[in-house]
Length: 424
Ligand SMILES: Cc1cc2nc3c(=O)[nH]c(=O)nc-3n(C[C@H](O)[C@H](O)[C@H](O)COP(=O)(O)OP(=O)(O)OC[C@H]3O[C@@H](n4cnc5c(N)ncnc54)[C@H](O)[C@@H]3O)c2cc1C
Image 1 (cartoon, rainbow, N blue to C red):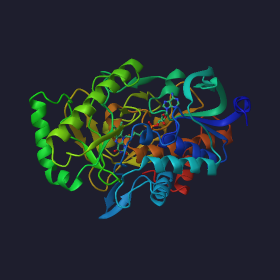
Image 2 (cartoon, rainbow, N blue to C red; image 1 turned 120 degrees about the vertical axis):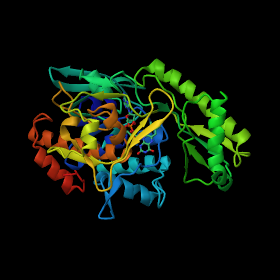
Image 3 (cartoon, rainbow, N blue to C red; image 1 turned 60 degrees about the horizontal axis):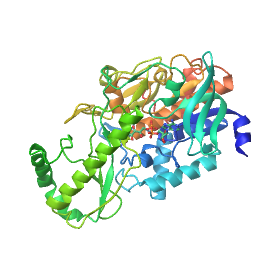
Image 4 (cartoon, helix red, strand yellow; image 1 turned 135 degrees about the horizontal axis):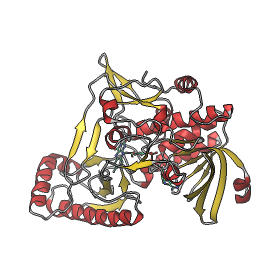
């Protein structure tokens, strides 16, 4: 098909954003018979895994009667098994190798018949009343317009919803968001020596910080092992009080984070056992955004809903990852951990933006407060939100109704039939 044929076609569903929530939505809708296009600004699928170098999968299970009980299942479990089988996940940990993820997802969308367009940046919409008709995307071939009956916003930043005029908010009520973090990797580390001295290195870091030799406000060094011998993954830069949806702020943040990365590398190499022969390898292509815009949808999920483990009648997903807030103002990270055997649910209404009848939102920008987002934002849970959004769009398309008019019972039934755990 030529670009002209792609643009003249009426797609059943366009998913903007090819992160895990977007892929889950697209594949799930395709399996329900929809003709689906994914529009993605980078050159691969998997979102933050590849763009921001995010790893590992954060915990998504609890214990019931002492036995492990997974809360993120369905498409997430399938993806997890696929990555395990293809080298994208470590055997007994949840460490992710992004190159295998990209390949596995390429193969998956091709096999399922989901059309994908890379290097395509959403830059506008066409709508009439409460109906979204088309999205405009900037490409090497100029601005292309794609039409569809339904749309899913899986951009992480709610770009599509905001362009469509849906109400939204940014981070906390004061507009501050969780910090941005540029992840990076250091190789040729003597890992056993590093592990032996880990505690002392953390102490030295704090001392250097107190003496003003380290400017990074993060309270400690956040570092993970990787699937590669001698390589460590650092999730430790911290840029606060910058707006992730303001392109000039993001530019500044990238530069600040790069300074922090070099500061950290010099500190480790010059002062810490195990790093004498180490080499700075690479940083992510984009600074990591934990939180930015979230829609003000038909239901606003709150911290109280999570702590009370509310079981919504229209639940479509469940979670229990801690409410993990990296301080938006500087040092410190706060946690609220859920007791064993308990979980909260996420209602379908939190995926529904106001004002538009044929649009759903999936991923870290659904309708919620800053605190609630701090828990459900992890990759296993956003994948389950994508599956729910894709199945919901398919039900709406078949019945030819708006996304808010579908039978929630039917949605829940389809999710359960497809392996999902909806928490009720
Ligand atoms: C520093 C950091 C550390 C984290 N650590 C972990 C962790 O250890 N474990 C864990 O499970 N989670 C972690 N998370 C959270 C998790 O990575 C994200 O919340 C999750 O990936 C969000 O998924 P998503 O599908 O909503 O968005 P994303 O994965 O960000 O996907 C959005 C996609 O949309 C595309 N896109 C965006 N805007 C446009 C546009 N205008 N046009 C076209 N395409 C667009 C992007 O390129 C991207 O591919 C971390 C996040 C950060 C930032």
